[in-house]
Amino acid sequence: MKKIINTTNAPAPIGPYNQAVIANGFLFLSGQIAINPVSGLLVQTTIVEEAHQVMSNIKAVLLEASYKFEDVVKTTIFLSDMELFAAVNDVYGAYFDGNYPARETVAVKGLPKGVNVEISVTAFKG
Image (cartoon, rainbow, N blue to C red; front, side, top):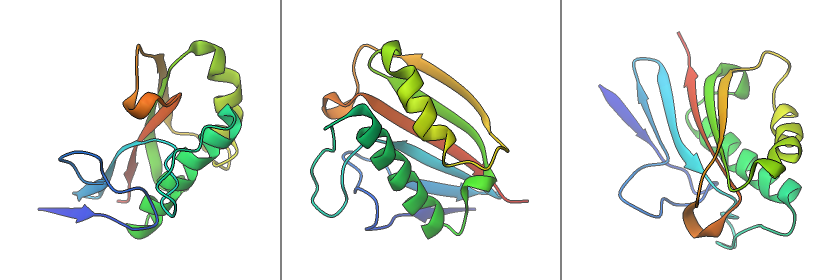
C-alpha cells in the first residue's frame, strides 16, 4: 500500500506527479526546485539562496510525512553546472547532523524552469 503526500508548504507539482509517496516505510520525494511555495516565484538571486529554498521545500515535505532529515538515506543532486558544486554542497551539508545519506551529484543539460539545482530524496523509517 502507498500513501500520497502533498503539502501547501512546498511548491505544488508542475506535472502529473505528487510531492512524495510513502511505501513500506520508504518516503520517495520528487525532485524539488527553488520555487517559493508562498509566492509561487523562483528563488534564483544567488545559488546559495536557491539551494536553501530547495532544502526548505524538501524539509516541508519531510515534515508533512512525519519524517526528518535524519531519516534520509539517499539523495540525488542535479546541477546545471559542476561549478556550482561547492556552494550547493555547503548548503546541503548544513541540513544534516553529520549522519549523511548516500548521494550522487550530476551536471545535466537542463532543469525544469531553467533552475540551477534540483534535489530528490529517499527517506526510510523502519
